[in-house]
Length: 425
Image (cartoon, rainbow, N blue to C red; front, side, top):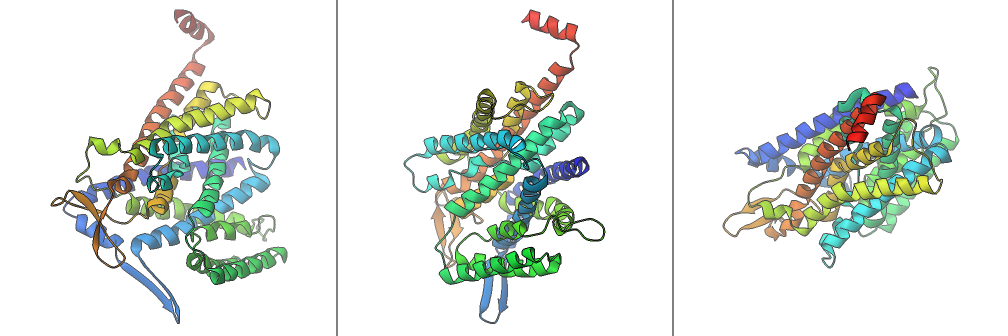
């Protein structure tokens, strides 16, 4: 288990660096003479038709609805394994990170709501600052090396997984369009087949994936966001049925998918969703209610929510701090958890139906092409929500790193030096 955790953290950390590179590249291209290539790429129509069944979307939505379903499938596999055998497998292990994650989702959402109260359109983004990006968060810890105790890394890992589960529930409950009863019925039938395969001890991965494709199409057409099909499929993949080599289908899939998701799907998602045009954007754009609500939620809300909830849980005896971890390190981790990025961008795309946007200098407004191919004006708040995500995440990464580095240096001081430092204050 320790070997797996180390491998997981190594992959996630490297993925965080690649995510940052993809985001920077997207913004550079978007604000260069190659802008037409970027927007044209995202708008390429991609269509699959089998008889009367047709799925036609621009490339951007194939990434967000299709490839991200694989990302959520991997999250589902990780959650199932952690609940059955890992850091969430017992009440003692689960309680503290679960309470911390709840506080870390609630307070940022409340801060966002306070900044945008009374605006029905803006209020759709209330869940954006509630998310934590595990790849970027672990990348920050990697920069600190052995100065971060293993218990703190495991606390962050468990907290982020519970946070992902919370985000999945939020997406299912609050970002669902008009429902199709017929397609929900087909999705239910696919789930029954998956349950049957699981109960019969079937370990054939292709069998599960074939039913999973049917489930994804059904969920896509039902009005529920298609990525949730990946999570549902993951919960039926066997963990305890082993093959000749002693590996379960879940372990094989998780091992095989992790590099693909970390180094392929997530960077592609970041590239497609962070191409912000800076034309028409000024300092005041960062102070609009939506971006400032997101930035404050991520940077301030996570600190208050996670540290406060953790302190309360320890105070009333619902949990205890990990070994060799002090409160300054918990505070540093709470700041690092303000790195929302991937999941925040994804929820933002659901809240504001993100599509490539252009700025028309003739009228001084942002424009977006409607479903009918007609350019229509777009409220700049919808454009700017990514500014809040990037600014809040970047600030959280820098400050969180500095706090954790300071906490590590404090603990490494010899007793005499620490006493001298204390007396000097």
